[in-house]
Image (cartoon, rainbow, N blue to C red; front, side):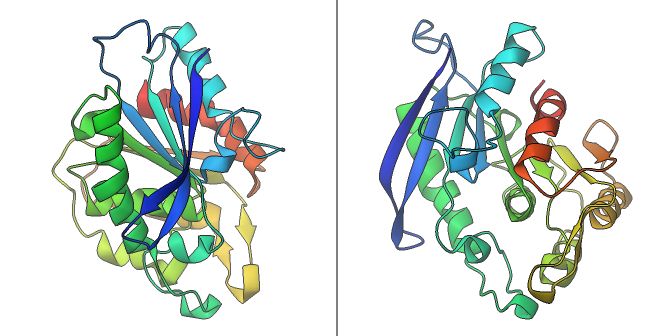
Length: 257
């Protein structure tokens, strides 16, 4: 079994406050002192791991899913960095303002924290493998939107993007408007949603199944090939951690395998 190291009060100078960061090192990390490991960054870190100090109910169990894949020889071990969300989750996971929900975006500062502060720390302290091909980012809902935003804005940093039920319709579909071309870099992008997944928080309609499918075809039109892009639409999938936990092994298998 691997280990989850929790760092509390990790300073984010870009955002002006501290965060909790949870870093999973895989089984064998300490026994292989010369080996370097690829890294997966995940949002909503309190929901990522099966661990006594994670959320009480319905976490993604990402460490167990990865260990199962490694045990079956379908993937190599990865370091996983879970970044806890804060009290202003809607704002920090919004790259752009969402006027319909009165949300003022702080996503750019959060993205800069990951790229300018957290990733250099992880690379300095842990034995990581360098390059976008070996650096992944994953999240769900607005965390899925932030993962896509990071892949779009920093393709030289993040080559693998996992977006489960991503809020691509947020800010009146601004991600579609901004993602105008293929990055021309090594890319692997996983998208999924429930076929009829739909929520309406505060009068803002969010049709996840329809919008995720439309974004997949948007990227296809920009030239992303089948080996770079995957779409999974789950019949009956809901907007909930249990659905993301269920689909995570499929996402990890395609994204990290």
